[in-house]
Amino acid sequence: MSGFLTLYRRELDLAWGRGGGALLACGFYACVAALVPLAVGPDPERLAAVGPGVAWIALALSTLLSLERLYERDFEDGGLDLLALGPIPLEAVALAKGLAQWTAGSLPLALATPVAALLLGGAPQALPLTFAAALLGGLGFSFVGSMGAALALGARRGGVLIAVVVLPLFCPLVIFGAGAIEAFAAGMNWTPGLAFLGAYSLAAVALTPFAAAAAVRNALS
Amino acid sequence: MRLIVENLAVARGGRRLFEGLGFAAEPGEAVALTGANGSGKTSLLRAIAGLIRPEDGHIRFEDGHSGLEADEARASRLHLMGHQDGLKPTRTAREELAFQARWCGAPEAAIAEAVGTLELQPLLALETRKLSAGQKRRLALGRLVAAPRALWLMDEPLAPLDARWRERIGALMAAHLAGGGSILAAVHDPLPIPARGVSL
Image 1: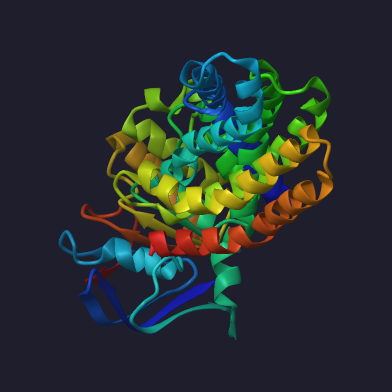
Image 2: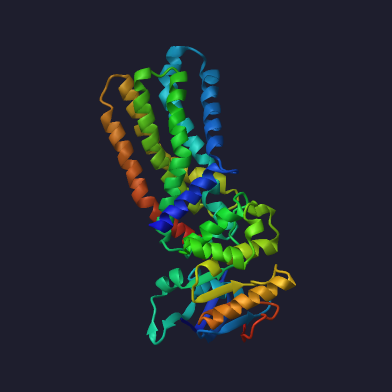
């Protein structure tokens, strides 16, 4: 357990410290959200219709930004050997990295999402749900993304490869997350969407560390 | 702990690097691994650490007369010191030493002691990208000193160090051997301590 916490703290520090992409991802998110009115026009009704969906696409894309360095920097400088020979199995290493990715990367983005949704004409009463969905969906984005980052280890242009591997797996998160918010806005039952979002995210937490650990072993050997 | 390598064959990229390799490293013994570039010294160290699966043969760890579970021995009884130091360029030497040593299970007092032994105090506040190769190596050696483990697997451990520090690290290695530890080091220059040679 102490090994897990030691690694988690170090990953947080790497994500937030210099060279980390957490704030950069928030800036990117703001930029994408700001482009939308320029593309679809400033008509409030039209914006409110596309708002939740666009906010979710921006969230998915912003998550991608900080993924490339997650395993790559440890792979390049030999630190991954140390992690592989550590006190906790590689599956737990992947879990710690995924959780840190969520805390450092998705939490700030989840805070930015209600703001973006509001600016895009989303209903104020939908904001708590927007935040909760972004936080829960961020868990799925982080863990599926971490798996993609591990799979792309050692590949040239790994960042693009991660995006190609990971974006199709993001589809359910976008469908359920944006779907729940849209259902809420339309006055329909939004709980099934949120429940499916949670289920997919938790399944990602439970399953992807095994795939990530296998990918790391493969990259090291 | 005794390391026993039997009839080992390792291949990289479809090419056999060596086969039929057998040797043992007894407690208190240093083994100097020599061979031309690309002869498989690094791969042998990584295979012993469990990072590479050998094509053939066995790697065993024994304590006294009883065999040890390989994964457990690897996680808690050996240090692998590759030719890269695994230091993050944007973190300070203090943070990186603390992480590496804690990750290996070293208590805080032992980390402070390692700082003294390796004279790391003046470096601690610096980001590791500002350190020279020799200083980085000393920092990476910190975890070996702070978290005592029986077997040190070292890949060119002395290459970046100056003459004074080669001597100092030699003394550290001698102390490790005197305490019943063993060392397997891939080298081009002879080690500053008595060592049995194994040629690939």
